[in-house]
Length: 194
Image 1 (cartoon, rainbow, N blue to C red):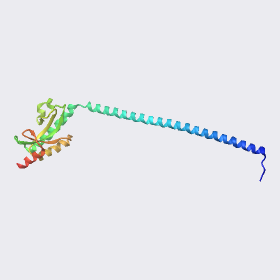
Image 2 (image 1 turned 135 degrees about the vertical axis):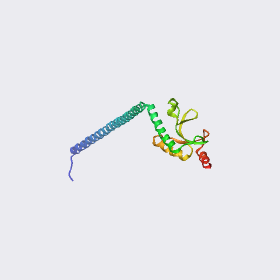
Image 3 (image 1 turned 45 degrees about the horizontal axis):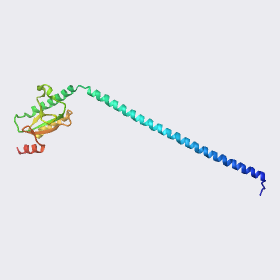
Image 4 (image 1 turned 90 degrees about the vertical axis):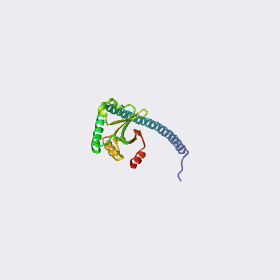
């Protein structure tokens, strides 16, 4: 085994001690760099989240603005013109059905097609001649309108399908006995008993 002199051994220990100190300094520097990097990553994440939230808010407000413009465009459509078109369509369909069915004048039980119930729409402001086929059914705070007088459920049902074809999807058959509402079940039973 080779022999190491005392001076060489002390130098080696000094070098090892210096290297150990440098190693510790490097380790501390690495930890500091890692902590600084983590801080920067957190800041970047926060910036990204804020950017995404701002983008979503911007998209939301853009969509709302689009809806408002779209709604205001629809509101600018002449409501009277729209109503007149619907009334004309309904009257054409009803007139065609009247000609086909030769409706009698006096019945206890009739079926009519309710086309709407409105709080603020009073079509009585239109010319009476234009509304001759409409019935205003008494109701609490609503203007309830129906059209047609049919003496069988089948006739009413055929007319209802025509009404739905022109765009009044929530219309329904309303049975009346002596101008009072009755249930559809009662009306069908009475009709079958005749």
